[in-house]
Image (cartoon, rainbow, N blue to C red; front, side, top):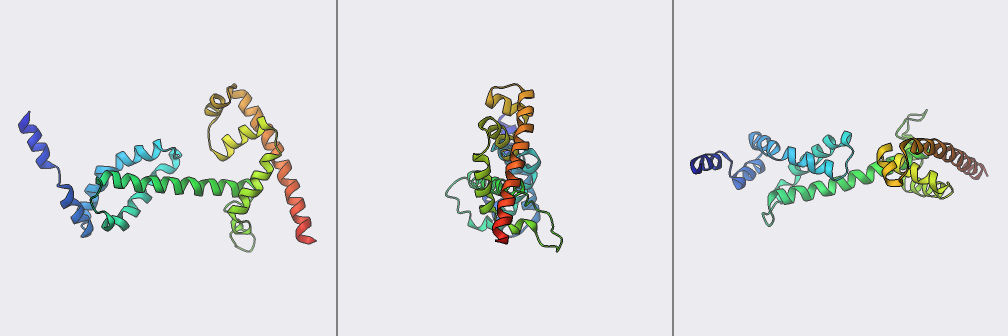
Amino acid sequence: MARAAEMDSAARPDPDEQLARCRAGESDAWRALYLEHHEGLFRFVERMGTAPADVPDVVQEVFVVLHRRIGDFDGRVAFRTWLFGIAVRIVKNHRRKTWQRRLARLVGFGPTLSEDGADAESLLSRSEAAVVVDGILSQMKEKHRAVFVLFEVEGLDGHAISQILACPVPTVWSRLQAARTEYHRLVRQWRMVRGEEASG
């Protein structure tokens, strides 16, 4: 038993040596580091609330940042702690960007190209989109607003929303349909007012 533990310990690379090799740009060391931490990072990013479809991209970004900042690691904390600190910041940034894209999309300025080839999202700043969406949501019926925000903005599914609001899943879908109708009516009103102001 003890001999097996010794052999296992001998098979593991020395962490300091591995990091030194990574800093030197050795691809084998980077590959070993990736294999050692990838699975744990994947679970961590997912548990932090990242949408399943976005988890691989977020984990990849963590390793991109790690590659750029490996020289900043000074050993004052465990490497895994430092790495997960990077992951936390990237998850937060990703969540904020996702939120901003959803707000822009909700007022009709998603990442699509306009007729002249310009990015339509640039026609309305994301900060302005947040103000517009907040204003529109404040005018909606409370029960509609709750379902709309949980589904369209927070990205939760019907089952999760039904648990949060303590109502059956069919009620969630009926409220969501009514909320979308109400929301789009208010967006049209906002567009009309904005159009009148622009032309006036």
